[in-house]
Length: 354
Image 1 (cartoon, rainbow, N blue to C red):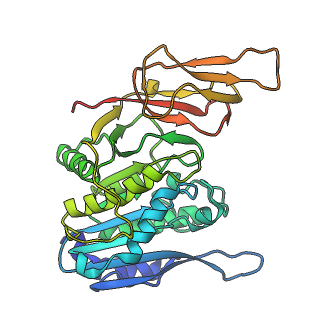
Image 2: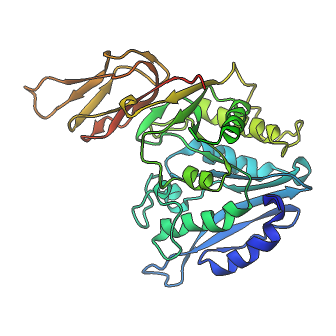
Image 3: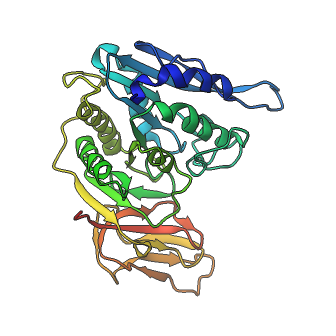
């Protein structure tokens, strides 16, 4: 039984058992829009709920694709593109099912923060979640236990938020399953970002990507901007990428016109890159204000200065240089200015050769 046909046996019982109640029936063809009603007791509302928008569009037979944005509230490009896509998508354009959550971590989206203001947790470090845990853990458990059993492909739209600037890219893990790895590389090419980055060597155990991969589901993420602003290029790439990826999967009519504004054509092939080792992640050796030497996307060399760490309150102390330990292309560049010891200020990627 495929995920597209499993809904009748999985969705109903799971919905009744979970603390989060879904207003939308995930099974029928057509367009259904409503909310996940996540309980949140507070001083002014003992039985209050957080109403997280969910939109499902289904028609005919085909794969089920989960599209998420707003896992981190300060990452805007995916929220913009996916909310517009969800608003305008018509069932006549679809062959299969598309489940859309454009503001999954709604409290963080409304606060424009990475961490949830409810429990100060990073939702993307809470997977697979806990039904009886904190708000973020409960939300992660709903996605893991109710939605993922229905899903064939997950596309999770991120940027680098306030913490960094990212070269516009899709991203994925370097997984052992050769067939799924190749299918994910092809999906990244269809999305059409300038770079696709395979990475490992950092804490990924609690991410949505890891929860998706644990079920053998195709998983693709993005990093489409950062520095706490809305990237014009990143938003265009998000719109263009949704169309390209869903057409590639056969879920979206190749002639469907979904967005208000034409996001344009893909410019050039996607470059597959890899962050091969922890040495490609460069941390601040002390607290201070970091002055980067390069923007994301720049070619850099091992030994070259990545930037300078300034102790601005100690006027007699010279700036401390930070040097690249690896050559390649700068995937992530420091964003916030003031950093603490151990904060990552640069991530270098290198060509992936398979």
